[in-house]
Length: 251
Image 1 (cartoon, rainbow, N blue to C red):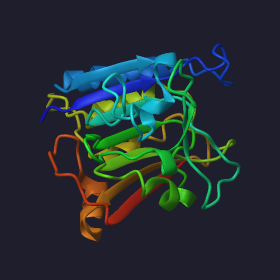
Image 2: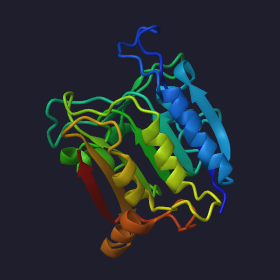
Image 3: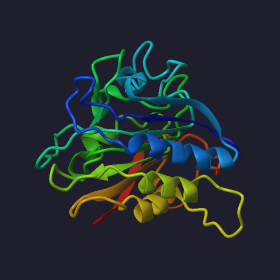
C-alpha cells in the first residue's frame, strides 16, 4: 500500500537569528528517511529544509497545516527533524513544542497541544514522526497529545529534560525508516511503528531520555492494538479518539 509522505528538516537556527544550537544532521537524516520510504514505493509530497519549514505547517488554521506547499496535514506521513523544547523538569501542564526557524509562517514555535490538530476536516495525516527535543513528555501527554488526534493514528517522539535530551542524529531516523517503510527485501524486518520506535528511538539520546509512541483508538482494545501492531501499510481506517494507549522506553 503506497502512502504519501513529507519531510521537514531544520539545520540552521543560529544563522537565521533563532537561537540554537544548529543541528547539522537533520537534513541528511530526512534524506535517509526519504530514501527508505521512496524505495518502499511511497511517494514524497514535500521535502522542505531550513527556512522553508514554517511554524504554520504544524498549526491548524487557515493557510496552515493544510497548505499544499508544506502543510503537515496534507500527506499521510510527516517526518520532522529539528528542535522541540525541554522543561527541566516538565510538569503535567507543561506544553510540548515544535520549533522551526522559518522565513515565513511565524511564529516559529508551535504549541502542539493547543495549536496542532491532525486528521480533522480535509486533513490526511495518519502518522506523525517528530524527532526533536522533548516533543512528547510523558507527564503531560494528556494535555499535549490527546487533542491533536483528530484522525491521526500513531505519533512518536521523545520525553526528557534539558539534561536528558535527544541528540542530533542521522542513524535514529534512518534506521527507524528502514524497518517501518515496508521495503521489499525478504531479509529486512518490517516492524510496527510502536515497536520500531522502541528499538530505534533510543539511538543517540542522553541518559534519562525516553522514546515514546502513542496511538488513538475507537476503544481501549483498538488503541492498544494500534500501539502494538499498526504498520504504515496496514490500511486501517481513521480511529475515533475515544481512547489512547502509549508506551515508552528510556535510556
